Length: 128
Image 1: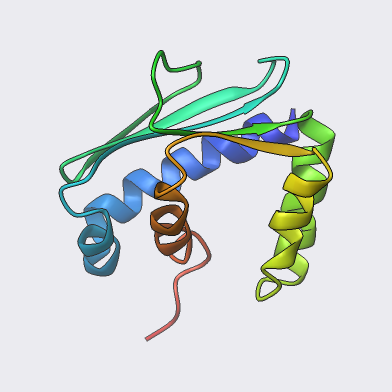
Image 2 (image 1 turned 90 degrees about the vertical axis):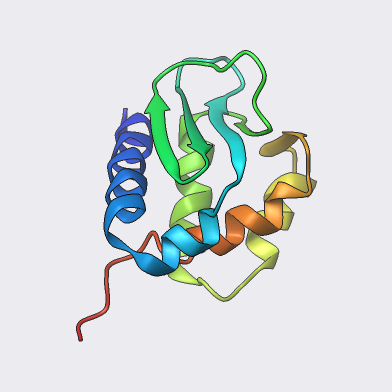
């Protein structure tokens, strides 16, 4: 349930950033990308569509995502996200999740770097 809620909040954040953040708008640019997040059993699923600066999201499995993050289950997903939040500069946490079989990447891996660039905007906005 918590993982599903987190993905929904991320949808709201992406849509807000696409309207209000010049930096985020620049990073998403004219890309046409569908990022899928789901559990292996498909109990939790959501995709995010980036279409030439416009964004949308649906709580379902997309027919042909550009790249998909497939988590072993919701608990594993939340544990991994929590660890990454506690040590945001530790890039090995995500890689260890892949190595241990807790997360699988499907599709075009070239978009991993692009996702990392947009994810820098997901946290709280800095005060001016």
